[in-house]
Image: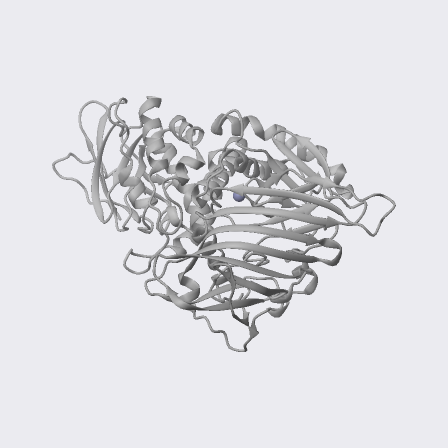
Length: 602
Ligand SMILES: [Zn+2]
């Protein structure tokens, strides 16, 4: 039992990277009074590497110990090494390595039956190591098993289920966070079953259980009041066909339930007074979300109150774990515009889940404070996106949005993509695509690192055809709008950002008061973009939409009344590597007869 402890790990990074979990069937037994967890897990693992696997590495938090590993009904010998890795709050993992008699061939799967157990007290070791003050560190790393609140966020916080990962440390750039994203993407297609048994002390029956952010019903067997030594038993379970882009998480707590619009809140007594303001924000924001996403959300939003008002919020799927505190109504409205969007738009793909929620947040700003403020909020995160993007597709792999693992892509870039789709297909078509979106249909097209799915593209193309709302470049309304050029440059591959400039402008006086303005545009980036081009003078303005091809040039001729004084290309909705708005001011001289076009200042 327990494996042989070794000082140097047996498994290699190549083996850790090759192993993918295809199915989890987990039986969790909690004894919160002792902070204990005991787990039996039936796992299906697959070799996604190119060469046979000699070892199967399995990792859990360093506060948990491996007990048995069985293959085909037989106990197998294994070694256990302690790895330094900040994907767990303790800063370390216990890695079991099984030496296979016959190496696992590429593409082959293996069924494992494992047990491990231990305690999960709060630990902020990884943050204290890099100099975070203890108090602040504990408000970030709040995961633990305790009587009134058990919170296990999974890989990246507490590795409470078996994983296989390359060791990474905080302070090494964004590697811990990239590894978290990579983990979620790799197990997105995994089947996940969990049965929970909780032995709670008398008087501390849990009132809320959440597995992977999903509220699950609790069955209680209370102990007889007299025998305080005998624990009560609470059970709950979840069975899902696929995980989606989420790290498995487990929450169990003693809280008071409050019902609000499309929202269930579970609070501690200290925070009951804030519930009314939170509930009113849920009611206030709901009609806005209904307008975009449909009458009924796919599930309810669950808000779970954290033990301490300083604790850092966390969200996964339609669950927001946060201190439920007094806040201004505007602050609460902003929180609900994002959080409730997750209750409507559930997707196993990060860019459609987090991207849509963040997009709704920016539309809420537009509705409440105007378009200018909404575009400013987009612009505030554009620089980080431009820095992350490869300057040219050859210079770095980047992250195709469809398989993105970093928030700067699946949140920031995705939000821009939806703003651009508003202009390309119209609000009605985008809204219809969201309403018609079905997570299981999308998942059926494949999930994970190699999935190449055009489900959402087809939804919005069909919706654009049916809405009859034609954008300037749309073909006849009966034909599906072909958005494949857009999806191939912005979603299915990472072509970086466009870099557009106004090369030159030639206004020419035609007849009467009419002017024809030739605007020469170029794009030195590798992604094509459709941008608005506006010519104006103090009396009038004309806007046309223009596709500027990747690494290409285009001339747009715009007819207007009166002499033009200004040309603007892009309004901030298309993110570019440098600025996302280009303005050229035209002088009196810029109006000579067409035969002798003046040189326009650059
Ligand atoms: Zn979110």
